[in-house]
Image (cartoon, rainbow, N blue to C red; front, side):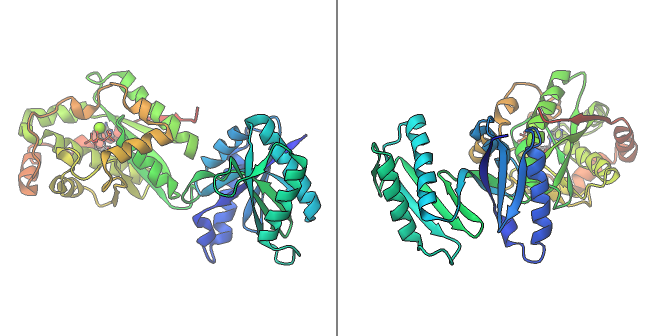
Length: 393
Ligand code: ATP
Ligand code: MG
């Protein structure tokens, strides 16, 4: 089978001292899994770089996209290789450029040589000059432009051979999935929580999700939207387990027994308690939310303090200091935005108070809650969970 070569670079994994082999092994496993949809794919480490070979009939950009979805990967380049002989390198580089002329009409170029193997007799700037001259001889339509070329060609002479490539297409970076504990994301259908889940997974955390609905006040379609969001995230992190809980019985108790302006905050405290119980049962060590300081009444500093008082598990809020526009940009980049903006109601909006408290006092909130049988309500909610397994689509 004819195969194309890709150079895949890791980011932070390279900074791991003694633990580097462990991270490299997991990263390679993740990469192989992401590429398992193609037959006879090869992937291996070679002197700090991953060399990947995939069936040549698969479009290069498709392979690049698959690779760059793997957390821990900094960049990917479609490449060709040549033996460590300057004439052979020149010929391979000229063939490579000819393809770019045919496909993209490239007219100007520049070669950047690099001699990673110091025993190679020609030094980096000279590699660029010699290879450039061979290209010019073979590809008559091309000229050199060192300031603003149509194509910048890289030639890297390493111990095992020479690689010729053009683009370094950026991956998401981060650390390989599964190297940093397990977390439970409280997942609404909004813009923020999918981004929060993504950011923690990008740091290597395995993610499980818990979603609250108020059926029949919220529609099955609203829950389907959350499943759709998780399916997009599963494209990065593999199958995700989703715990669905009907919050309506608790919301009704709150509405009947507690001050209206405290509704949202009281609901959020119940969400945290229930999520913590489910997290413990499933061996998750942290809760994750998409909260962002000051974005809405329940996300003021005071409200966050009061929310956190009901759980002992650490609560991660990776978006806490981000601006909404930046969160929206991130959602677009990872592919969740278009689903998030579909207009389906969330359980938080079902009993939305007109003027929610923005500076809640813990004693007052606890006094309101004392009118409810908190433990029994939480227990019943946890026991009523439905589990959905969401696969990548
Ligand atoms: P998002 O865009 O993530 O919905 P938001 O800005 O709408 O966030 P809130 O509705 O106040 O903010 O929710 C804050 C956080 O609480 C969410 O990011 C999410 O982690 C959690 N949350 C809200 N609604 C739900 C829900 N129905 N199920 C699970 N978690 C939820
Ligand atoms: Mg929301």
